[in-house]
Every structure is written in structure tokens, then in C-alpha cells.
Length: 403
Ligand code: GLA
Image 1 (cartoon, rainbow, N blue to C red):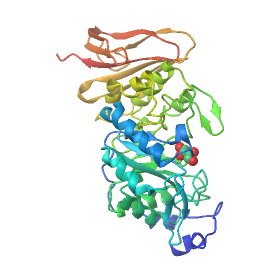
Image 2: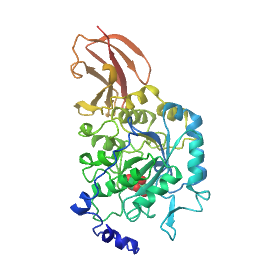
Image 3: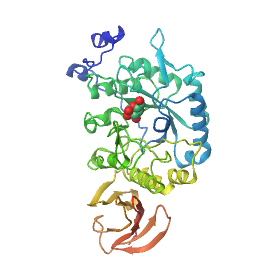
Image 4: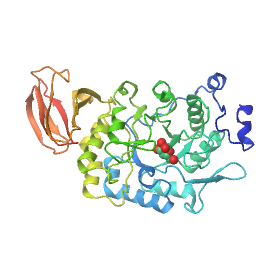
């Protein structure tokens, strides 16, 4: 390993050069300790990036932690407060990573203690390259030193990005950090963020607890903005991925935009429902200290969250598609099903799921709860449906009647 990182030690940026791409490096980096069982359900929390990008500070993070604890989000299951890119400024003469002294004058440890004092958990961000995506120091060559530092600070979660990695091998790079975190002596969730570029379905579950499946989301129903894509564009990339997900190994279609203003309330309800049917990590990305009633109502919908967090951990599948009309479904513990009728068209549409589509006997009677209107219908046989608003969903939980 010495020669592998010699260039880094000399302070040379190795952009475009081989860092750890060889099979030899890969082989020597097999994980010995088992992955800690920290995400039996998809992680729930908040991350600074979607709303604030680099405009972050310890004051902002404290405010967000206060809001998570007092608004009802904590009670609904949200627990991680994650600082994304731009908290770091430089390394000291010993190579220790330093928080930006202007924006985080009290240092990370005191912020971690504050977040913990609210009964919440704390997450940080780094990158497997020499620099983070925003150009701050990355962890390449410093994995064990950084992991030790995170553990000393009391960090519970690491989002680990993939900018400025040159020709590094992704599996090897994430394996090194996983190994470093496991060696740190602290239980730390590893959130892998290589945007689905290096076939993470094949290996990411060994290193991390969740992995991004796409590039970044931006706060829009659809479209593209630089490298970021809209909510429905992200959804379309999840269709075939259900088989790779499960407890402690979640596909991550990126963070939530609910409450950030670029979509309608109906579209945010769809976004939240679809992320729940996908068993996605629910990482809010809005200003929790200033939420309107709809944003809070959506983010704390306990019935929808219960689908996301269901202990079976089976990611939902698109079981039907007819143009703009899609049906997504997933089995839940105890024989229940969650179903989303999703209308992507510009007009309201009547939609219906049949028991046949769910592989249930046609004569079976079920109780159906609409998870947004909260209306319960008993003894439903054969199918269930209704009028779905343009860009909206009907999301239900179906409980077959015991014979
Ligand atoms: C990448 C990630 C984002 C965010 C930024 C930070 O684009 O995919 O989620 O972390 O970097 O610079």
C-alpha cells in the first residue's frame, strides 16, 4: 500500500492516475469484520445539500437539529442530521481533517454533542477522491485517519462521495473506507455515493448500508439541470433495481426535495409515496425550521413511513404501466400490500389495481386504507381504485381478511 499512496503523501493530486485500481489492491482489501447491522430499515434523517449546498454553518445545523426534535419529525422516525459537502477546510500538519473555522468555530465535536443531546444521530460527508465534489479535501489516502477522527467525534453516519477519484476502482475504494470505519471501533452507517456508475448492485452491499443509484436529484417533476435530474427521471431508473435491495442494503434514489418549492404539493405527495414504495432512505432536504403545514404533513405521514420502514424490507416494483399510468406495489409483513396508483399525465384519471395484478385470489376480501385521505374501506373484493389527480397518487395499504 505504501507505493499506492506515496504520491498523495507528497501532496500530489493524482487526478486521472491510478490510485487503487489494481486487482492486487482489491484482493488485499477484503473486509474482515462483518458489516454492522445499523440499517435494518432504510435510514431516516436530514441532509444539508439539497437546500443549502455550501451555505452551511454550525448555527444552521443546530437550528435544523432543534427543528427535527421539536417539529414532529423525530417522533415520526427521522434521526440522522447529516452535514454534506463544505464543512471541511484543510488538513493540519499531521493530516488531521479540520472543519471550516469560520463556519464551524466550535468544531465538529461540540456540534455532534449538541445533536446527540437532542436524542438524534450525526452524519458527515467525505469523498473517496483527493478532493470532494465542492473541492474540499477528500479522504483518499487518509481513510483510516479520517475514520478514527469521525469515531472520536462521535459520528454515526458517513456519506462517501466519488468526485476526483481518477481511475480508482470503486469497489476497492469503498472497501477501504468500510474497513476503516469498522476498525474505528464505532458503529457508523456507510452511505455510498458513486451515482450508480460502477455497478454498485454487485458489490456495494458488502461495504455499505445504502448506495446511490443515480446522479443527483433536483427539485423538479422532471428534466435535467447540469448533472441533476428531476424526480420522475430518477424514478424511471429504479425500475429494475428491486432485486438488490433489502435490510442493511438499500438502493438510494437520492434525498427528498419535499418542501423545497420546485414541485406542487400533489407532486411532493407522489415523491414521498414513491420513495416509500421503493424502500428508499428518507433523507429530508428542506429547511425543517420553516416548514409549511403541507410539508410537515407529507414528511410525517406515519402510514406512508410505515410502508417505507416495513420490516420485510422488500423494495416495491412497478407491476403495471400503461403510458402515463403506473402501478407500483410491495408486500409488507403479515401479508399486507402497499400499492401506489401513479398518474403522470396532465389530467385526472380513473385508475384501479386488481387482485390479479397483486397475485391475490380474485375472491379475496380486503380492508383498504387510503394512506393520504385516511379513508378505510372494508370488504373490498377483486380490485380497488379511484380518481387520481394529475401528477398525483392514490396510495393504499391492503390488508387481506383472515379466513
Ligand atoms: C455530489 C453528490 C451530492 C452532494 C454533492 C456535494 O454531487 O452526489 O449528493 O453530496 O456531491 O458536493
